[in-house]
Image (cartoon, rainbow over all chains, first blue to last red; front, side, top):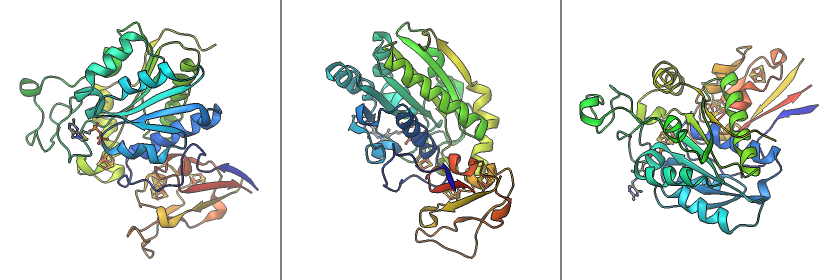
Length: 249
Length: 70
Ligand SMILES: Cc1ncc(C[n+]2csc(CCOP(=O)(O)OP(=O)(O)O)c2C)c(N)n1
Ligand code: SF4
Ligand code: SF4
Ligand code: SF4
Protein backbone atom coordinates (compact mmCIF):
# COMPACT_ATOMS: atom_id res chain seq x y z
CA UNK A 1 0.00 0.00 0.00
CA UNK A 2 1.42 3.35 -1.02
CA UNK A 3 0.40 6.64 0.53
CA UNK A 4 -0.93 8.95 -2.17
CA UNK A 5 -1.74 11.91 0.07
CA UNK A 6 -1.22 12.77 3.70
CA UNK A 7 -1.04 15.95 5.75
CA UNK A 8 2.05 17.99 4.84
CA UNK A 9 5.03 18.14 7.20
CA UNK A 10 4.93 21.88 6.61
CA UNK A 11 1.91 22.00 8.94
CA UNK A 12 1.94 21.35 12.67
CA UNK A 13 -0.49 18.94 14.29
CA UNK A 14 -2.50 21.82 15.75
CA UNK A 15 -6.21 21.82 14.88
CA UNK A 16 -7.18 24.80 12.73
CA UNK A 17 -9.66 27.18 14.36
CA UNK A 18 -11.17 28.24 11.02
CA UNK A 19 -14.87 27.87 10.26
CA UNK A 20 -16.04 24.84 8.24
CA UNK A 21 -15.03 25.19 4.58
CA UNK A 22 -12.88 28.30 5.13
CA UNK A 23 -10.34 28.73 2.33
CA UNK A 24 -7.56 29.68 4.75
CA UNK A 25 -7.03 25.98 5.57
CA UNK A 26 -6.68 25.03 1.90
CA UNK A 27 -4.14 27.77 1.17
CA UNK A 28 -2.19 26.97 4.34
CA UNK A 29 -1.58 23.48 3.09
CA UNK A 30 -0.62 24.55 -0.43
CA UNK A 31 2.05 26.78 1.11
CA UNK A 32 3.08 24.00 3.52
CA UNK A 33 3.33 21.43 0.73
CA UNK A 34 5.44 23.82 -1.32
CA UNK A 35 7.88 24.42 1.54
CA UNK A 36 8.10 20.65 2.06
CA UNK A 37 8.65 19.90 -1.64
CA UNK A 38 11.34 22.57 -1.97
CA UNK A 39 12.99 21.24 1.20
CA UNK A 40 12.96 24.66 2.85
CA UNK A 41 10.80 24.19 5.95
CA UNK A 42 13.88 24.63 8.14
CA UNK A 43 15.10 27.77 6.37
CA UNK A 44 11.82 29.62 5.96
CA UNK A 45 10.34 32.37 8.12
CA UNK A 46 6.68 33.25 7.65
CA UNK A 47 4.96 36.41 8.85
CA UNK A 48 1.38 36.06 10.10
CA UNK A 49 -1.10 38.93 9.76
CA UNK A 50 -3.95 40.27 11.84
CA UNK A 51 -7.22 38.74 10.72
CA UNK A 52 -8.63 35.25 10.92
CA UNK A 53 -5.22 33.84 10.00
CA UNK A 54 -3.56 35.62 12.95
CA UNK A 55 -2.79 32.20 14.45
CA UNK A 56 -1.02 31.03 11.28
CA UNK A 57 2.16 31.00 13.37
CA UNK A 58 0.75 27.98 15.22
CA UNK A 59 -0.11 26.11 12.04
CA UNK A 60 3.04 26.28 9.90
CA UNK A 61 5.99 24.19 11.04
CA UNK A 62 8.56 26.68 9.73
CA UNK A 63 9.62 29.61 11.91
CA UNK A 64 6.91 32.25 12.15
CA UNK A 65 6.62 35.84 13.28
CA UNK A 66 3.57 38.00 14.03
CA UNK A 67 3.09 41.51 12.66
CA UNK A 68 0.88 44.45 13.55
CA UNK A 69 -2.17 44.82 11.29
CA UNK A 70 -1.05 45.29 7.67
CA UNK A 71 2.63 45.58 8.52
CA UNK A 72 3.68 42.06 7.50
CA UNK A 73 5.60 43.20 4.36
CA UNK A 74 7.60 45.67 6.48
CA UNK A 75 8.36 43.03 9.11
CA UNK A 76 9.23 40.55 6.35
CA UNK A 77 11.58 43.14 4.83
CA UNK A 78 13.47 43.42 8.10
CA UNK A 79 13.65 39.68 8.57
CA UNK A 80 14.83 39.06 5.02
CA UNK A 81 17.51 41.74 5.14
CA UNK A 82 19.12 40.48 8.35
CA UNK A 83 18.73 36.72 7.75
CA UNK A 84 21.47 34.52 6.30
CA UNK A 85 21.46 34.31 2.49
CA UNK A 86 19.14 31.55 1.35
CA UNK A 87 16.50 32.27 3.97
CA UNK A 88 13.01 32.22 2.46
CA UNK A 89 10.55 34.77 3.83
CA UNK A 90 6.83 34.97 3.14
CA UNK A 91 3.85 36.91 4.40
CA UNK A 92 0.35 35.51 4.58
CA UNK A 93 -2.28 38.28 4.58
CA UNK A 94 -6.00 38.87 4.24
CA UNK A 95 -7.59 41.65 2.20
CA UNK A 96 -8.43 43.82 5.20
CA UNK A 97 -4.83 43.43 6.30
CA UNK A 98 -3.09 43.91 2.93
CA UNK A 99 -5.49 46.03 0.88
CA UNK A 100 -6.80 48.38 3.59
CA UNK A 101 -4.67 49.19 6.63
CA UNK A 102 -1.53 47.72 5.05
CA UNK A 103 -1.75 49.15 1.54
CA UNK A 104 1.25 51.41 2.05
CA UNK A 105 3.43 48.55 3.29
CA UNK A 106 2.70 46.20 0.40
CA UNK A 107 3.05 48.92 -2.25
CA UNK A 108 6.36 50.17 -0.82
CA UNK A 109 7.74 46.64 -0.37
CA UNK A 110 6.82 45.86 -3.98
CA UNK A 111 8.39 49.11 -5.19
CA UNK A 112 11.61 48.26 -3.35
CA UNK A 113 11.54 44.79 -4.89
CA UNK A 114 11.96 43.05 -1.55
CA UNK A 115 12.90 39.42 -2.04
CA UNK A 116 9.83 38.09 -0.28
CA UNK A 117 6.75 36.10 -1.27
CA UNK A 118 3.32 37.45 -0.42
CA UNK A 119 0.30 35.16 -0.19
CA UNK A 120 -2.79 37.34 -0.37
CA UNK A 121 -6.18 35.93 0.65
CA UNK A 122 -8.96 37.92 -0.99
CA UNK A 123 -12.30 36.90 0.54
CA UNK A 124 -13.98 40.25 -0.19
CA UNK A 125 -14.73 40.92 3.48
CA UNK A 126 -13.26 41.44 6.95
CA UNK A 127 -13.66 37.95 8.39
CA UNK A 128 -12.29 38.12 11.91
CA UNK A 129 -14.13 41.24 13.02
CA UNK A 130 -17.55 40.09 11.87
CA UNK A 131 -18.03 40.77 8.19
CA UNK A 132 -17.44 44.47 7.55
CA UNK A 133 -16.91 45.87 4.04
CA UNK A 134 -13.34 45.54 2.76
CA UNK A 135 -11.76 47.50 -0.11
CA UNK A 136 -12.23 44.25 -2.06
CA UNK A 137 -15.96 43.91 -1.31
CA UNK A 138 -17.89 43.67 -4.59
CA UNK A 139 -20.40 46.26 -5.80
CA UNK A 140 -23.80 45.20 -4.47
CA UNK A 141 -22.30 42.87 -1.86
CA UNK A 142 -24.02 43.14 1.51
CA UNK A 143 -21.83 43.33 4.58
CA UNK A 144 -22.46 44.56 8.12
CA UNK A 145 -21.22 48.02 7.11
CA UNK A 146 -22.91 48.00 3.69
CA UNK A 147 -26.25 46.44 4.62
CA UNK A 148 -27.86 47.56 1.36
CA UNK A 149 -24.87 46.48 -0.71
CA UNK A 150 -21.67 48.35 -1.62
CA UNK A 151 -22.15 51.21 -4.05
CA UNK A 152 -19.58 52.92 -6.25
CA UNK A 153 -20.84 56.33 -5.19
CA UNK A 154 -20.21 55.63 -1.53
CA UNK A 155 -17.15 53.38 -1.51
CA UNK A 156 -15.64 53.42 -5.00
CA UNK A 157 -14.82 50.37 -7.06
CA UNK A 158 -13.15 47.34 -5.38
CA UNK A 159 -9.35 47.39 -5.43
CA UNK A 160 -7.51 44.96 -7.70
CA UNK A 161 -4.20 44.25 -6.03
CA UNK A 162 -2.62 42.00 -8.70
CA UNK A 163 -3.26 44.63 -11.36
CA UNK A 164 -2.01 47.44 -9.13
CA UNK A 165 1.18 45.75 -7.95
CA UNK A 166 2.05 44.48 -11.42
CA UNK A 167 2.69 48.10 -12.47
CA UNK A 168 5.66 48.21 -10.09
CA UNK A 169 9.04 47.13 -11.43
CA UNK A 170 10.05 45.47 -8.14
CA UNK A 171 7.08 43.11 -8.26
CA UNK A 172 8.35 40.42 -10.61
CA UNK A 173 5.51 37.95 -10.37
CA UNK A 174 1.80 38.43 -9.72
CA UNK A 175 -0.84 35.80 -10.32
CA UNK A 176 -4.48 35.49 -9.24
CA UNK A 177 -5.78 32.00 -8.55
CA UNK A 178 -8.63 30.25 -6.75
CA UNK A 179 -9.02 26.87 -5.06
CA UNK A 180 -12.69 26.16 -5.80
CA UNK A 181 -12.02 22.81 -7.49
CA UNK A 182 -9.11 20.47 -8.15
CA UNK A 183 -7.92 21.93 -11.51
CA UNK A 184 -7.85 25.43 -10.01
CA UNK A 185 -6.27 24.15 -6.81
CA UNK A 186 -3.48 22.55 -8.85
CA UNK A 187 -2.91 25.85 -10.67
CA UNK A 188 -2.81 27.69 -7.34
CA UNK A 189 -0.20 25.26 -6.06
CA UNK A 190 1.93 25.82 -9.16
CA UNK A 191 1.68 29.59 -8.75
CA UNK A 192 2.72 29.40 -5.09
CA UNK A 193 5.63 27.15 -5.95
CA UNK A 194 6.78 29.49 -8.71
CA UNK A 195 6.55 32.45 -6.35
CA UNK A 196 8.86 30.72 -3.86
CA UNK A 197 11.26 29.54 -6.56
CA UNK A 198 11.62 33.06 -7.94
CA UNK A 199 12.33 34.31 -4.43
CA UNK A 200 15.12 31.73 -4.13
CA UNK A 201 16.66 33.37 -7.21
CA UNK A 202 16.39 36.81 -5.58
CA UNK A 203 14.20 37.98 -8.45
CA UNK A 204 12.10 40.47 -6.49
CA UNK A 205 8.75 40.51 -4.75
CA UNK A 206 6.44 37.66 -5.76
CA UNK A 207 2.71 37.90 -5.18
CA UNK A 208 -0.05 35.29 -5.30
CA UNK A 209 -3.63 36.42 -4.77
CA UNK A 210 -6.06 33.65 -3.90
CA UNK A 211 -9.78 34.32 -4.28
CA UNK A 212 -11.21 32.85 -1.09
CA UNK A 213 -14.53 32.05 0.52
CA UNK A 214 -15.68 33.26 3.93
CA UNK A 215 -18.79 31.10 4.31
CA UNK A 216 -19.55 32.47 7.78
CA UNK A 217 -19.61 36.17 6.99
CA UNK A 218 -21.06 35.65 3.53
CA UNK A 219 -23.91 33.84 5.29
CA UNK A 220 -23.66 30.80 3.03
CA UNK A 221 -22.91 27.11 3.53
CA UNK A 222 -19.42 26.25 2.18
CA UNK A 223 -20.55 24.74 -1.13
CA UNK A 224 -22.87 27.70 -1.84
CA UNK A 225 -20.03 30.05 -0.94
CA UNK A 226 -17.81 28.39 -3.53
CA UNK A 227 -20.55 28.83 -6.14
CA UNK A 228 -20.98 32.49 -5.18
CA UNK A 229 -17.24 33.02 -5.53
CA UNK A 230 -17.21 31.51 -9.03
CA UNK A 231 -20.23 33.48 -10.18
CA UNK A 232 -19.41 36.84 -8.62
CA UNK A 233 -15.74 37.19 -7.75
CA UNK A 234 -14.05 35.65 -10.79
CA UNK A 235 -15.80 37.97 -13.31
CA UNK A 236 -14.54 41.06 -11.44
CA UNK A 237 -11.21 39.56 -10.37
CA UNK A 238 -10.11 37.58 -13.46
CA UNK A 239 -7.76 34.68 -12.78
CA UNK A 240 -4.39 34.55 -14.44
CA UNK A 241 -0.82 35.82 -14.55
CA UNK A 242 -0.53 39.62 -14.31
CA UNK A 243 3.23 39.88 -14.13
CA UNK A 244 6.00 37.48 -14.95
CA UNK A 245 9.13 39.48 -15.62
CA UNK A 246 11.66 36.97 -14.30
CA UNK A 247 12.40 33.54 -15.69
CA UNK A 248 12.57 30.55 -13.35
CA UNK A 249 16.14 29.29 -13.79
CA UNK B 1 -6.88 1.37 -9.34
CA UNK B 2 -8.29 0.83 -5.86
CA UNK B 3 -7.82 3.20 -3.01
CA UNK B 4 -8.37 3.46 0.69
CA UNK B 5 -9.32 6.74 2.34
CA UNK B 6 -9.01 7.42 6.06
CA UNK B 7 -10.64 10.39 7.77
CA UNK B 8 -9.57 11.74 11.14
CA UNK B 9 -13.27 12.04 11.92
CA UNK B 10 -12.79 13.80 15.26
CA UNK B 11 -11.40 16.81 13.38
CA UNK B 12 -13.92 16.90 10.53
CA UNK B 13 -16.09 20.01 10.28
CA UNK B 14 -18.63 18.54 7.87
CA UNK B 15 -17.99 21.26 5.28
CA UNK B 16 -18.73 18.90 2.35
CA UNK B 17 -15.93 20.27 0.17
CA UNK B 18 -14.58 16.70 -0.15
CA UNK B 19 -18.04 15.51 -1.17
CA UNK B 20 -18.16 18.17 -3.89
CA UNK B 21 -14.91 17.07 -5.60
CA UNK B 22 -15.07 13.26 -5.39
CA UNK B 23 -15.35 12.04 -9.01
CA UNK B 24 -16.93 8.80 -7.82
CA UNK B 25 -19.54 10.43 -5.57
CA UNK B 26 -18.81 8.02 -2.75
CA UNK B 27 -18.26 10.48 0.11
CA UNK B 28 -21.23 11.17 2.35
CA UNK B 29 -21.83 13.19 5.47
CA UNK B 30 -22.68 10.59 8.09
CA UNK B 31 -25.81 11.95 9.76
CA UNK B 32 -25.73 9.14 12.31
CA UNK B 33 -22.41 10.20 13.80
CA UNK B 34 -21.69 13.40 15.72
CA UNK B 35 -18.03 14.04 16.46
CA UNK B 36 -16.60 15.78 19.50
CA UNK B 37 -16.71 19.12 17.70
CA UNK B 38 -20.46 18.65 17.17
CA UNK B 39 -20.32 18.10 13.42
CA UNK B 40 -21.58 15.20 11.32
CA UNK B 41 -18.32 13.96 9.77
CA UNK B 42 -17.56 12.84 6.23
CA UNK B 43 -17.15 9.14 5.46
CA UNK B 44 -16.75 6.88 2.43
CA UNK B 45 -19.54 4.36 2.14
CA UNK B 46 -18.38 2.24 -0.81
CA UNK B 47 -14.62 2.11 -0.45
CA UNK B 48 -14.24 -0.44 -3.28
CA UNK B 49 -15.19 2.32 -5.74
CA UNK B 50 -12.40 4.67 -4.60
CA UNK B 51 -9.77 5.31 -7.29
CA UNK B 52 -7.21 6.94 -4.97
CA UNK B 53 -7.31 10.22 -6.90
CA UNK B 54 -6.80 12.18 -3.64
CA UNK B 55 -9.12 14.99 -4.74
CA UNK B 56 -10.92 14.83 -1.38
CA UNK B 57 -7.68 15.01 0.56
CA UNK B 58 -6.28 17.88 -1.50
CA UNK B 59 -9.27 20.13 -0.93
CA UNK B 60 -9.95 19.30 2.74
CA UNK B 61 -9.21 22.60 4.54
CA UNK B 62 -8.43 20.75 7.74
CA UNK B 63 -6.07 18.22 6.11
CA UNK B 64 -7.69 15.29 7.89
CA UNK B 65 -7.82 12.86 4.95
CA UNK B 66 -5.14 10.29 4.11
CA UNK B 67 -5.32 8.42 0.82
CA UNK B 68 -3.58 5.13 0.08
CA UNK B 69 -3.33 3.16 -3.15
CA UNK B 70 -4.00 -0.55 -2.69
C1 LIG C 1 -4.59 48.53 14.18
C2 LIG C 1 -5.78 47.64 14.12
N1 LIG C 1 -6.91 48.08 13.54
C3 LIG C 1 -8.00 47.29 13.45
C4 LIG C 1 -7.98 46.03 13.98
C5 LIG C 1 -9.22 45.18 13.91
N2 LIG C 1 -9.14 44.12 12.91
C6 LIG C 1 -8.76 42.87 13.24
S1 LIG C 1 -8.79 41.80 11.94
C7 LIG C 1 -9.35 43.02 10.90
C8 LIG C 1 -9.64 42.75 9.45
C9 LIG C 1 -9.30 41.38 8.99
O1 LIG C 1 -9.77 41.17 7.71
P1 LIG C 1 -8.92 40.42 6.63
O2 LIG C 1 -7.54 40.95 6.57
O3 LIG C 1 -9.71 40.48 5.37
O4 LIG C 1 -8.76 38.92 7.15
P2 LIG C 1 -9.83 37.76 7.35
O5 LIG C 1 -10.22 37.85 8.79
O6 LIG C 1 -10.97 38.00 6.40
O7 LIG C 1 -9.07 36.52 7.04
C10 LIG C 1 -9.48 44.24 11.59
C11 LIG C 1 -9.98 45.48 10.96
C12 LIG C 1 -6.78 45.60 14.60
N3 LIG C 1 -6.67 44.35 15.10
N4 LIG C 1 -5.71 46.40 14.64
S1 SF4 D 1 -14.82 34.17 9.56
FE1 SF4 D 1 -14.53 33.74 7.38
S2 SF4 D 1 -12.31 33.98 7.00
FE2 SF4 D 1 -12.64 33.81 9.21
S3 SF4 D 1 -12.35 31.63 9.69
FE3 SF4 D 1 -14.54 31.96 9.39
S4 SF4 D 1 -14.90 31.53 7.22
FE4 SF4 D 1 -12.68 31.82 7.49
S1 SF4 E 1 -9.58 9.45 -3.29
FE1 SF4 E 1 -10.81 10.21 -5.01
S2 SF4 E 1 -12.30 8.59 -5.42
FE2 SF4 E 1 -11.42 8.14 -3.40
S3 SF4 E 1 -12.87 9.09 -1.98
FE3 SF4 E 1 -11.27 10.61 -2.37
S4 SF4 E 1 -12.04 11.85 -4.07
FE4 SF4 E 1 -13.30 9.96 -3.99
S1 SF4 F 1 -13.39 18.46 3.45
FE1 SF4 F 1 -12.47 17.72 5.37
S2 SF4 F 1 -13.46 18.87 7.02
FE2 SF4 F 1 -14.73 19.11 5.16
S3 SF4 F 1 -16.27 17.47 5.30
FE3 SF4 F 1 -14.58 16.66 4.10
S4 SF4 F 1 -13.24 15.62 5.58
FE4 SF4 F 1 -14.63 16.94 6.75
